[in-house]
Amino acid sequence: MREQSAADSPLGLTVHSVPAPDLQAMDQNARTRKGRITLMLMFLAVMSPVIASYFTYYVLRPEGRRNYGVLIDPQQPMPQIVGQDADGKSVALTSLRHQWLLVSVADAACNAACEEHLYLSRQLREGLGKDKDRVDWVWLHTGNEPVPERLKAALAAGKALGMDKAEVAQWLAPEPGHQLEDHLYLVDPMGNWMMRFPAKLDAAKARRDLERMLRASSSWDVAGRPS
Image (cartoon, rainbow, N blue to C red; front, side, top):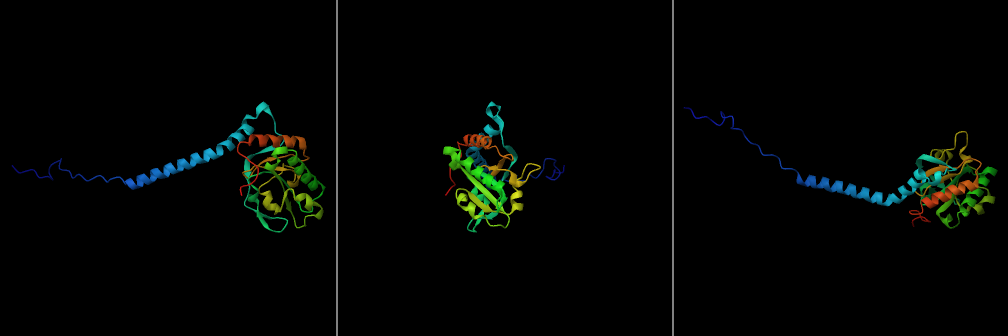
């Protein structure tokens, strides 16, 4: 009888070796995932007080209170635009972050309504007492006219930047039927525009909104900017 060759046998199959897993790549992927998780946990640890304060103010709203100012949803982050200070030096708008900002916008010639907003901004800040150092008032002035001499002494207590109005209008927006110059705008320390106060401002009601926001953020916001 003819011997059955290996080729004729149904069990005579060639077994190929299974490729060994790329242990180095697997280890790298594991380290990458661990790094991402670590970064996410660090971000949550840093941001949790901020998130909690906004949740308290926006969602819980104790005693069913109502805001005087209009909350902006979604909040609008500060753009990467540049203005000029009183000395003609270029100043990035984002350099104003890390403080609460009360912002007004008006032509540099500054009519009576503009002067009233500057006055109210200063008074609102002063009315915050011990918390006033957490707030800056800011005038973004537009147009080609020079700032009047009569305002320069008062502006030393605030921050004034010459800006392009079209660029500012891509960030801040008035209530329908109104002009950009009609409102005061509230910006949080992270640089987000988050509230617009009504035209013909009621200073007492606006101050209550400011005081609430400052209380809600007291666990993570401190006066001054990082050096």
